[in-house]
Length: 156
Image (cartoon, rainbow, N blue to C red; front, side):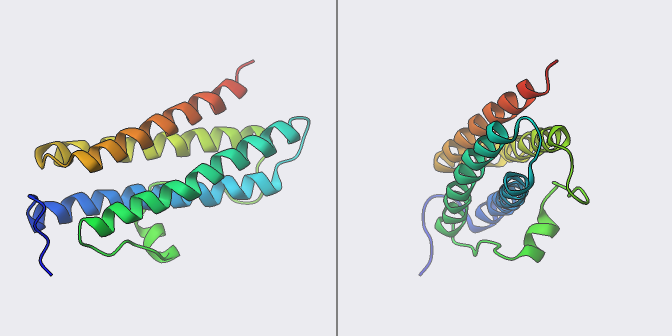
């Protein structure tokens, strides 16, 4: 059935392409955060283990919201490692980094999701797509707060 929500198909497609990048960044950050939760060591183990768990749990819920918005706009959500690897700007570190390097890497990942989401606002605003704008605003708020909390751990 044709979708008639007041946003033309081509514009919806453009928004979905951006949301797909947000989804890929978020899922990649989820995997990375979960990895670090499992593999962190050192004197801050308990603190970081719990913080990383809180963050990856939130990300697990967030990817579902982003994917569902893509579906509501009438397109399939990317859902494979291959798709996510192609769409994400978040890279991987080799091996098991130190706790400090994990934190710095997660700060970079959180900030990357914010930049990807922020880059989508022009298209979303032009389309008067308030539900997507609301979702992006919420995601940016979470990721900016997470980056700040992680960054605080790197202070001397």
